[in-house]
Length: 381
Image (cartoon, rainbow, N blue to C red):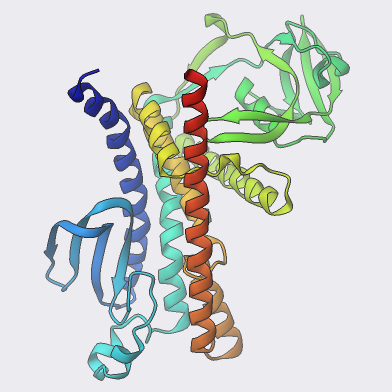
C-alpha cells in the first residue's frame, strides 16, 4: 500500500473522530459558557482542544476563542480561575479590585456556580435529544417486525415454548412494535420473569420466559445482558420504515436519550458492583475506530454515535469525582449545607485525587484499546 493510501486510510477514521468529539466537547463547554455569561461572569477563554493554538481571536467581551492542536477535549476559563478546571487562583483573587471580583467565577453565589457547572452535562443531554430528534424526523426509523424465525436450543425461549413464526405483540402487557423494542426490554431484564403476548397463526398465547444473563459483543467491547434466545425473521417483507412528525420525533428522542442514560448508568453501577466487565471502557483509539465505521454507513449513523457519546460524557462529568463537574457540584452542596466553602486544603487534596482517578481511567481505557488491537493483529497474522 502506498503512503498516500495509508494516509487516506487513517484519515477515514481520524476525520470522523475529530468531528464527533469536537461536536460533543463544543456543546458541553458552550453550556458552561452561556450560563456563565447569563450569570454575569466574565469568560477569559473558550478552548476547543488542548495545547498550542492553531487559530484564535478575542471577541468584544474579552473572551479568547481558541482552536488548539490536540482535539481531545476543551475548556472554558472563567475570570479568577487558575485553569480550565475552575480551580481558583487564590493569589490573583486576593489582589483583585472589587470591579473585577464581581465578574469572577469564585465570587458568585453558590447556586450560580452550581448552575454554571451543571450546564455542561445538561448541554450534552440536550445535544443528544436534538440529534435523535433530527434523525427520527428526517430519516424515520427502520423497523423489523418482532417475528420469531429461529429459537436457540436450550435457551430461555425454548423452555418457555416459543416457536418459529410467533409474532411477539406485547411484553408484560405493554405493546411493542419492533424486534428492537423486544431486545431492549429483554436485555435489561436478565433473571426476571417476563410475560410475552404472542400471536401464533392468529391465536393469542401468553408465554412466560426468564432471560438469562449472557455476554455479548458490542462495538465498544463485551457486556452482560439478558438473552431470550430468539432470532428475527429478517426477510425484506418483515422490514418497514416508520416516519414521524416533529412532535413524535422529539418524544422518541427524549425516550431514546433516557434509554441510553439508563443503560450507561446501569453499566457504571455494574462496574462498581463487579457485575460488568471493563472491556467496554474504551479510549480515543476505539472511539476513532467506531467513528470511522459509522461514517462509512452514513451521516445519520455518525450523528447517532455523537449523541450516544454526548450522553456518556454528560454522565461521566456528573460523577462525584473532584476535577469533574460532579465533584464541583458535590463541593457546592457541602458549601450550601454548612454555609461556607470546604477548607482549601481539603479541596486541593480532592482535586489531586480526582486528577489521579481521571488520568488512571484514561490510561486504563487506552490500554484496553491497545490490547484489543494487538489481539486483532495477532489473530489476523
